[in-house]
Length: 549
Image 1 (cartoon, rainbow, N blue to C red):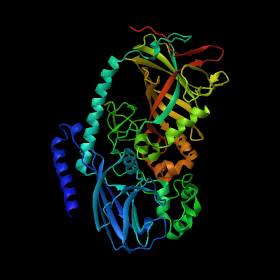
Image 2: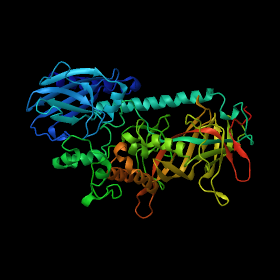
Image 3: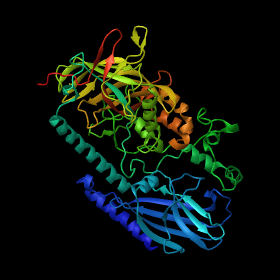
Image 4: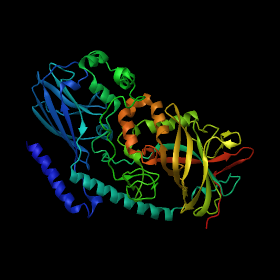
């Protein structure tokens, strides 16, 4: 009772603080602890367990110290408790080792305590990969178990979190503007000059990632990570099926994925037939801030001739009216986040295989810091990446353009300008090859635009942001091809499919009125390279010198 009173007193105090200070100094207001819980029962054990026992574990995570405090209660257990611990990282139905002992002084009916989390443990907790296990004399492997889930914040906490995020975005925008004005030597003024075309810059794209704006405590996903296909499948299994798959808890299922996706009527694949079952609604990002561009030129949420009604974001640079519904769709999936596998593996596969290599060529540069009219071309390379013995992409390599007859097979040319060392392109429709996770696909972007900072980082790369309306059919085609990653990517195909069509905000179908594309943003980095045109020498930024006023 004391713990509950203390917890609610903390939250009530936070509400009072927030109502007074949220509009004064939102960036400095503590949003209070992150709350988690786990409902404990025998049903979640991988092994056959028959018990009337029940339990509840409640956790408070301090944001400053990452200290996790807990209170665990159990009732109606069949025998003496041997131990209570947090295990992980693992999903439902499979076992993992102990991460934190919740009863270091011995088991009691009510356990309280605390421990400071490591960064890895914090990631596991936020990703929904930790569970509480209660071991007893009758069931030494575990009698009660419960996956740790996030409890949504109060309205007062949400207000503080949103206000702090918006204030940080605006401050970040102001700081970036100052930094750009002070920026020194962009890539075009490097001393090494190998370019055959002064005034031309070209690059080979090294990495291409969904632009997911993440906070340390995953506040953009107040309900926790999205529930994946794997969890939905496991929860839907009977006890007999679970026993059969795990040999009554003695083994882990060798490959859960083939069975997990075949959970539709009569064993239908729910990815290829996403309307065959009705999964719970997708948990989507609730953040007010995102990467991206104001694609429709409006700061309100209303529909236009080319868009459906949608909720705008404030950009991480403070720009109002940012459109990036793909972020809202993907941000709460573990597989698309910083520690996920989809973009990370995709970049590695392109680097190692040489498939889907993209080139960017900028011509007509008259001033390294400010050029009012340049041309920007996108191509697919015919050649693979040139890499060193450590597997790193080499700068200043030469790449031929992949041609189909007398025209480039992929890509387009648009206009742009360079302002304070940053390239800004005008909107253009762009189709590019995309190879990732052993799947060939295409990125089909309407109204694509690129913002590329031409000042190289310490690693020699330039970095930028790509935005546009991603054709839904093309995107879903890729999702189907990487179905084999559904267990590690953690998504529910039916929930993802439904949410994607609900969030789609670009290019309405003339007949149905439903939008056929979804606003998106991608972070990319690139290395200087030479582009070889058919029948000509290479152009490139192997350090091309351009006059700078």
